[in-house]
Length: 467
Image (tube, rainbow, N blue to C red; front, side):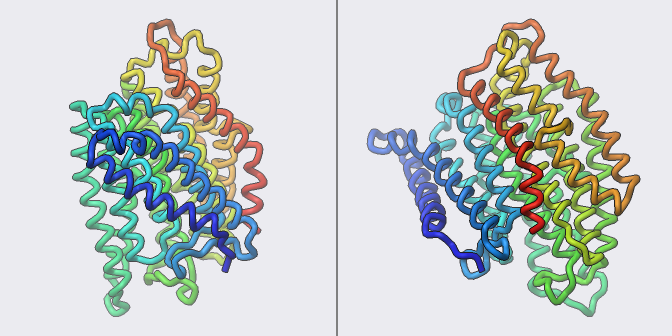
């Protein structure tokens, strides 16, 4: 068991207290006595979450077993989830820098200050939860906070998107409850029951991650709500559900004696289901993104395609685990691809939100911001040496040993995505009148710099995950 530094426990505890204090202050409104807390709370929460992420990352990569164990084993962060949490911390800083001024103008602006630390707290716990009760608690916390964030801008489209999100989230939560109930009261006598429980678990996470055929809600939410609110949900909160889906998939490939959540299902079947879902998800996402005329909807469909690429890595990881081999390279690819996704989508959705979808000319005369957007899009596309390149490389290499056809389809889909990414960049630098704020400009440039830096460090991170 890894030694836990007092600083990590203090950072997590302070983040909890900050979430409670900001919620009470938000309920009190803009009274003079709490206004300072509402102003200082969000950056302090981001700083605390970043500190917890850095300490978790350090302890996971320096401990002999590569794990950080909290709450008597109910919460375990390993080297994979520590990268996920670190990515969420970077995205949180970027999202806050891009949106805090706009959030002050929202009719429910205290809610943004109150919900941001709740989202971060939920991400930290859901990413590492291994106890079913903690999974449900952190799932509900993060889900409800996400619904509120989508509705905060107060415009008609955001309210409609939040309503749709609540409907879908309710279904996903019911499926999660069925999955957890099946784990707790599993029956080995009924051969159908394990498959039903597995289907419920994968479907619940499929809704949250945006996997076909559970993706249908995502363009109506990500493509319709204010992009600055979507940046928090898509770039930060979604990473926790990716981590949970990865843990479930890896668990299903393990032997029963080392698998506390074991269900009697064939790992080969799980790998096949994930591979089929990967093909459908990335193909549907890319084709829809290519044919839509709305740039924010294009980003939404692109998020669906990105989920498909992650499923390619997951199918390879399950195959390797079931064969008794280490899945570290596939896991490293998933972690790095999640990082590329978080950095790019946080900044790009914020850009779409600030321009109100009228992206034309928003970066004209701003070569630094235009170059930053180009770097982020290139990372999503998988251009060397950016972090997105390493994410796809480390996912596709082990997947080739499982199914060369799957990798060929994934590469073809990556090629298709270049068409709409180029269209996005061309629209931004075309002649027009739109301009971006200083906070968003800084966020885009910082996201691009982190994308390059992470790309340079990616081989070392991947090698460390495999130690």
